[in-house]
Structure formats: structure tokens, C-alpha cells
Amino acid sequence: MLRVLVVDGANVVGATPNGWWRDRARAASLLHQRLLLADTPYDEIVLVLEGKAKGGIPPGRDGHLRTVHAPRDGDEAIVEATRDAVERAAEVLVITADRMLGARAEAVGARVMSPSWLLDQLAT
Figure 1 (cartoon, rainbow, N blue to C red):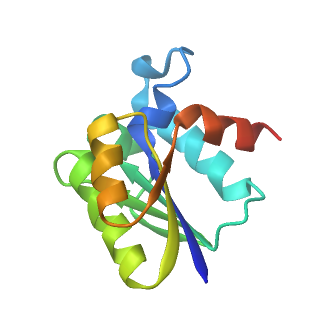
Figure 2 (cartoon, one colour):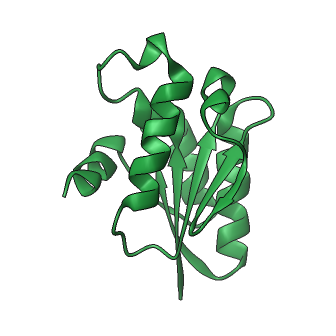
């Protein structure tokens, strides 16, 4: 079974008080690099970016990592990416701290974990 990780970029970047708000594009780029180099059990990682964070990475695929630029708010793009993966018979894990978004992701068939869980995985 295909395993897909969908990442709410804004939530993950915002989980660490390291000055990310001064340069959202750079913070998103650093997260992208960490995800690209991470040794994870996921066949595909979808990083969803919104607002100024989109300036850090162009949309598209880089190996197993696909970056999506949300046209408006990231929530809709995250739910769409989740639904698409579930429809492809994938096991999907969504990373977000947003409870409403998490409930929407679970409603389409995904599991949900917090940004701190992902950051712990990236630290190893």
C-alpha cells in the first residue's frame, strides 16, 4: 500500500519559535530541505504552503517530495491532497495542529499527527 505524508507547512514551521515569522519563505525552504533529506517510511510527501511561505520553494515534484502552493488558504489544499491520496488507495498521515483541519482530514480517511511528532521524526 502506498504511504503518503501530507504536511501543513504553516503549522510545522510555526511550531518552533525560532524567528520563522521574519522570513516565511526561508523557513519553508528549510522545512522542504529537511523533508527532502529525511529517511521516512513514506512513498510520497506532500508539503502544502500558503502565503509568503510560497516564495521559498516553487511548486512541483522533487523526488518523493511534492510541493503544493495553496491558491488561498492551506486547509483546502491539504484536504484536496489528502482526498486524492486516499482515492489512490493510500495510507495517509496528515501533519497539522489545526483541530478543525484534522477532523476534516480524518473524515476523508487520513490519520492525523501533530507538528511536534513530525519534528521529532526529522530530528533522528
